[in-house]
Image (tube, rainbow, N blue to C red):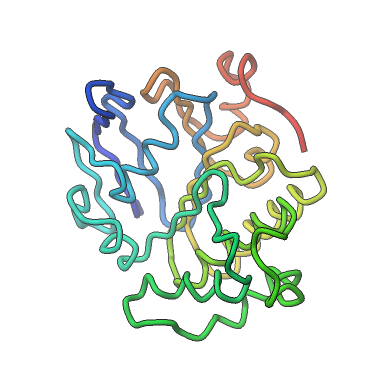
Length: 236
């Protein structure tokens, strides 16, 4: 069953159209991968889903509801979480404060943190009173995902989670994503350039090129695409 449908959306920054006629769907409970090189519209598509950048044409349907014109906070309260590229944690706030900020999306003030956050991200328990900006890149990425999870989403947009992180931590984050998906049934969209990351945890994928979807299929089919072979990395 589809949980999200993106129907022929166009997205522009001023006069420059970045995404044109983008369509894809996400099935309930799957880990879907959107791959492509820098500048092809992957991140812009995620921002359009979150209402951060408006779609000028087309529709975005979540659980049967048209969310195309909703504000970001309204979309978040429907259960969509977003972990942006570059992590975007609050560097001067402690780990605990960063996590608590994730609960604010529910619109009920600061809420207790879900217990399972520290089962998935045990390193954060030992860093609770440490400022976010002092964490390593891998720890910051874990904090960004955990902060998103603090808002109890059932659908997460995860943009470039392996970017700039050492391979052993990339592997750990990949396993955490798979565990959350398996144990909680949370649906993911992974935006990535790291093909191995997607092959190891994704079930299906789309390739974006020059602002539109060029092909789709299961991950093994995606891996053989000439576009993928030319532009994407195959690393840990």
